[in-house]
Length: 88
Figure 1 (tube, rainbow, N blue to C red):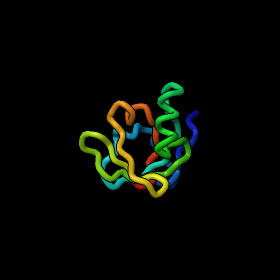
Figure 2: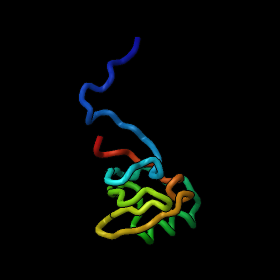
Figure 3: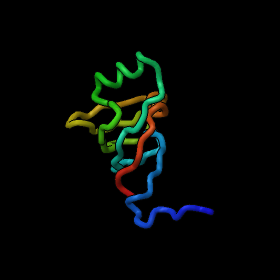
Figure 4: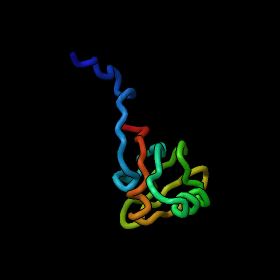
């Protein structure tokens, strides 16, 4: 028997990577898949699990606004950050 799915759009959770987002979209970081050094680099930029952010530019490197600061991440870093979109 299949359990009933979510009834409201807000209940739908779609995990994806930061590099999949488009300009203007907002999301929350749910996981970072990388080693200690990558996590440290990201933490110094304010990019931590549970943080909300908005994509400023998604062409080439990804530029995001997070915790009131703007930071740019290379595609390699962005591919290691699992996110959950907040606006659909």
